[in-house]
Length: 106
Image 1 (cartoon, rainbow, N blue to C red):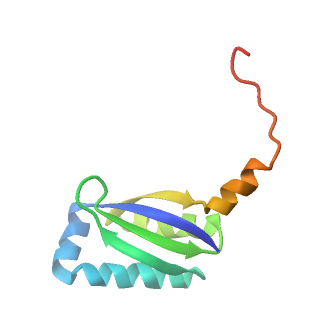
Image 2: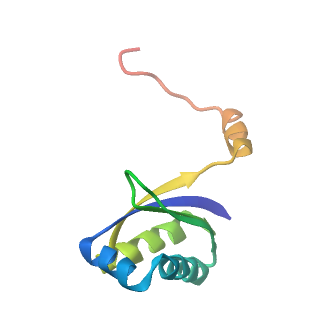
């Protein structure tokens, strides 16, 4: 499984939904959505300042993360930004890969 963090900013209608149904209903909805894509919700928080909410999900692929973001975005209730999360061991593995690159002007 891959970990993704979804940063959410609610539309006015989305905020009205949170006010009407409560924050736990949003957590449950995101958990069900992640599960429908073969994943799970690790954590869900409302945030003061910047983003209005974040969710960290374990999902089977980048395509599943894209489907989650597109499904939510298509409702118009929230705008999502997706961040792929890497473990320290993943970064260690990346440092072992050989990549060819020439900087501009070099």
